[in-house]
Image (tube, rainbow, N blue to C red; front, side, top):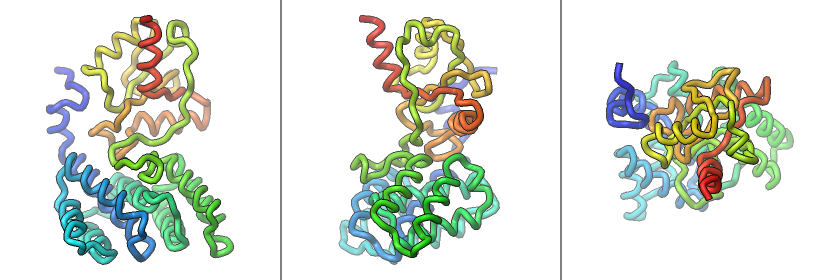
Length: 293
């Protein structure tokens, strides 16, 4: 059996149906998140347009194109976003766990895109999690619920509580537009990165797995470099994995919009054993460059 190139054309054709569904659900949730406060907030227009443009560029989505055109024609308002989300929901299987997950992740990204959580948004986040038991099985979602419950206790969302909810959401969806000024549709989930001291010794004998989309192509070249430092390369995350190296961009074929099964498994394992360590492609490239000086 031939080995398909990671993120290559052949794999893209195999995964196209699932990827189309994933992106559709994510963008639907994102629109729901934008509409969650009951009005189009001033800080939501720029991140909404940035996400729409990125979505059109990467995926091609008619609703995203229509939103851009409505903005250019000064016709964009809350009803446009809400109606588009409602229409798209008719095409989503509410019994599909993956669809519900990606829709929720999109919803969270829409809610947090302006860096502010309103009372209405916190209430909807709480309701979404409580009404879908599958969501609480995802690492980080329970913490989002707890922060929302704490904030809603007195019926007022303070600035500190808003920030706490934003930070909790950021742990599962990654940075938001308010943090970076960039569309984050294809970014990777936030994670606690381990700093490697000396690549010439710290990788020796370690079992390493790669995930995500890397600047080094083909990815086999990076695997060969790591093997040269004494690392043992593996294809899946398990209890014996020492380090998971995360590419700079989300993989097109991840099961979730910004987190694949390898990251999810690593996060679950870390709750029990503090392993594996997660290391970014950026740190790795810096260390490799220094080692050749």
